Length: 415
Image (tube, rainbow, N blue to C red; front, side):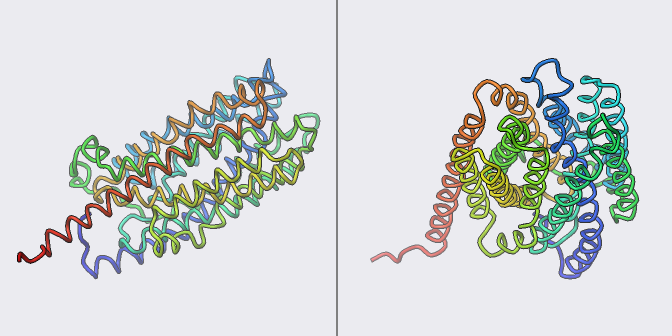
């Protein structure tokens, strides 16, 4: 990383703190988009789809939108500045709500899938909020900036499911139709908040500078960060997207499902108030490992029972595990690039994560319909083991390099 002077660090941290407030607020508002989609997507899908095994396709299309939007978000941010990308993203959020409501009113499954895909594009832009918070900040403040922006999602966890609960029956018999109209209004409010973010257009030297992307992503530390992100997010998504439909199949109510999703989202973002401090104290790798172990623990709870309490406990533990592993992996990514390389590296990292998630997401409906809730939870274990193995090998390699460096600097005296 390029060194910053003390004055640059103070100035950069002051600007970052100002941005963090707006980005955290935008995270809360934008999170309502994904909360509405995840709380309603599989249930609406089961109503509109020609076959129950296709019920989670709208959620899969959201994930495809996430994957499809990451690289364009990076390119737009690099060419025109992050603020332009943010405004385009919130525009997609408005369109998501209006199109989703129209699709429900006209019972169109393809149109509803199109709406959730556009919602994924909005979500892809919102994923860059956490990285935008770290722009120009000192190395010490970056993990905290990422963590505090993620903490804005706590309010999304309350806002999104409650929005669904309050509005789902406003236009009977069109369940959830008005929920998407309100979601479009929330996206407009997010747009107004993001207009004030201090994110100027990059300088020409930033646009042309930096190492080639292939050289950066070949670094072992980037590979470790990417693998941990690829494991943590898709595994969380697999269980989360299946849970509402699994709860319905098990005879539980929509209110039970909304409650579970609400506290899952709170658990996803609530730890962000202190995750940055944990990373500063224990290191990102240890925090990631703790998160992956919690995701495995959530799967174990899911295998234990099918009452509402078991589903809620699974979703809450899963959310905390995701927070530790994903925020930690994001902090690791920030260690792999120089300032002028940030947009392309961060966008590529998110593309890997959401591209993998998109592939796995299409199988979640089939997995649940054909093999049941237990199979969904069993799938979590092998990827988590892979992530823990990669982290362990990386830790051994770091310690070995440190020992060799110490020996080379302080050789044993000859006798």
